[in-house]
Image (cartoon, rainbow, N blue to C red; front, side, top):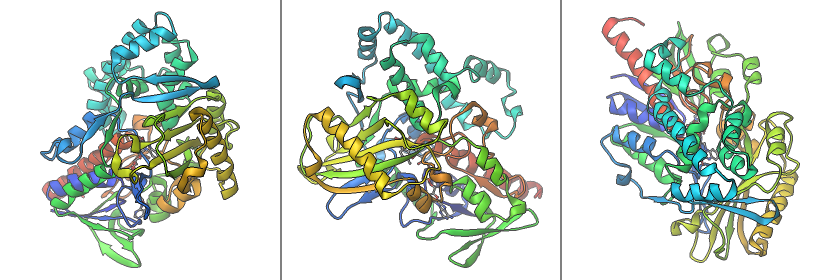
Length: 498
Ligand SMILES: Cc1cc2nc3c(=O)[nH]c(=O)nc-3n(C[C@H](O)[C@H](O)[C@H](O)COP(=O)(O)OP(=O)(O)OC[C@H]3O[C@@H](n4cnc5c(N)ncnc54)[C@H](O)[C@@H]3O)c2cc1C
């Protein structure tokens, strides 16, 4: 049994802690904030609203099932999942709307009604996407990606070639579909989670399969229930949790992490999982000689977007709203360019609205509605109250236009969250919300390494290392880091190799 410190209680840290505690180690989790969940924390207001502060799309339910299965549980042991049908609404220019059904056959009918012949093409597209999902999510994403040699198995190589890792996602989508609405539907997950579609590997077609075939789900009680479930598992295995406990430094001697410094006190450990933002750990907690990457390396990375969020409570119900609505009623290409190519506050933003109280009575007082507005934004931009307010007005004007009713006078709770809050709350590099962009040069073994090359007992987890951004990848990242560390600890225990 080793004593292991986990830095950060987001999904990746919780996952790593649960696995390591389950394998018999003594695990302590240190979190700078006063609650667990990281970017997926919940905020309970005095007026009775419960806001999921980050994630709201529960995709890839099989990844969660596999996670709970590893500990002998089912997802249903912890929370109830509701399949959203319709999955979501998309709003286009001139009040044109598209409602995405949960059922794939109905989706095919919808495609055909928009573009002749697209039903058959969607079926072909999804057959390939299913292969990518199965190969990608069941095998490739669990690989530590420490070297190209890991991919040297013949069956893996054949799979990778078929996965079109090197093709462009944007070009690929356009081979199948030409109507702008269908292209927008296929490209939105890529855009919101991390890169221009033309620069994302076609591999990410697996996201389309995840979203449009496996379904969009909602955990009753919100994502906070998922956080609680993982904490419960880790606690049952005696993991300790220390909140309001920011790690201030990692002490390294002779290539081994010896201790962490928390609130001025040094606490000794045999090994460390750093599940806080990678750049913060590397450049702010470690001495310069022990860093994996220089600041100039970080400055050259393509970051996934930051975002402007509004958490809103309404004192009336809005029956016309779905759980998820995507406002694609402005120029998608222009907004992507202003996120990735010429970073600036968007001229005509796209945005997203979540109304979880349509599905869940517990997240708003009776007769009230819980709204979450999110506008993707280039990482690294300065933000201020004035600018947040400007975009609040833009989003509300378009939301009210879409609903055909005034709702501003019914707001009884409102709070904004933007780039500077990501920095203050999570030590986020440039205020990124979702880590590194999913570009080809930042995929698999070209991503930031899960192990520290100079500190042998230090491993990283989280959305800035493999496999990448999103709740399911963060859970997987925690497992990969835990396995790598565990293997290292076994090596030194059995062979005395340090
Ligand atoms: C607004 C938003 C919407 C999203 N929507 C979705 C979605 O719909 N679906 C989806 O699957 N994913 C979504 N994501 C992505 C998903 O939430 C993240 O990928 C995932 O939660 C990241 O987990 P993590 O453990 O890597 O990082 P984090 O959650 O950031 O956890 C890192 C933790 O480390 C802590 N920390 C930092 N520095 C220190 C320190 N020095 N000492 C101690 N602790 C420290 C932080 O406080 C934080 O709690 C969204 C993210 C955001 C921000």
